[in-house]
Image (cartoon, rainbow, N blue to C red; front, side, top):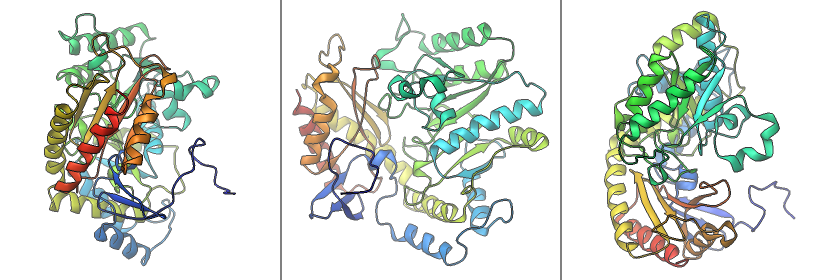
Length: 436
């Protein structure tokens, strides 16, 4: 009997014993192509000697020092390096242990900013429906995916939700005409119907992650949303936990639209999953205000040198091997190959994404976009078929109405070889075709 409290209860998990490049090997010798990078985490690739050496070197210097007592050379170096690529002016980085902590920190930063400016009434955060920002309570309250919120509903309800940027099922009655204006109008309507100066921030993923399967917004969505926020004094928080560090083919997802947020969150790809690490970064104006008023916040493991050292190694690998550009090119190729391989598959409603963040939406009826019934367990069957053929994919369900809806995601490491790409496409096509 295992004493592990597992993440899943419906199956026994294999034991991973080795990982290298885009492949994971279990204790029985089975090899799996990591087509999802875990939970869209692994960007550089498994078993990278430079990342492992960076962790080993840092551990030989310091192991733990409290962030109110010391800084470290690794932390100072990393923040200097990452500030140069962030879409923020005069960025200041608050390192934490992962995405949920990063979002909690960002939300508190926004609150502290408004308090310092004498606007204590600004307490509400607007996020989007069908979104995900983490599992700590503040991040979960911002998250708009109802199945994730439902068990904890009595503890939630402080934040509100705008329409999702979801082109395949857009709520705009005139879609695809004027979607950017429609979304901006909906956000402005929410702001004007709220008590005066009660909204602190708007938070969203530049490209929707697991909950909507790499849904890319219309081209003018982000510029128009940012403009509304600026006019009403609402901070823009770009949640780049999944989309950051090259995943979408740019350093950060928001870079596709040239928008500069006020606060940005990161996780997952910061260390390519090697060490739990993430951060919330504030622009200089936000930092200056918060610093003047104080920031009541902190974690035992924040500002840690180990994560910073590995983060620096990730930045070097991404730069030296031009991996961000590689993510963009491989993503375009894989999406095109999937579209060709699944063109006549009646179960495929949409193939979408940017870079190596790719989503496949499965439907019962292509014409009406009617989803499969949840009882059909379509997503689970695709994942099982892929796993049986040595391929790991990521998934999400319930996005259409809180119960029904099936999404498959690909988010492999950027180091895929030619043979890996071929296997990834072929095995994904076979798995999807197994259900229709």
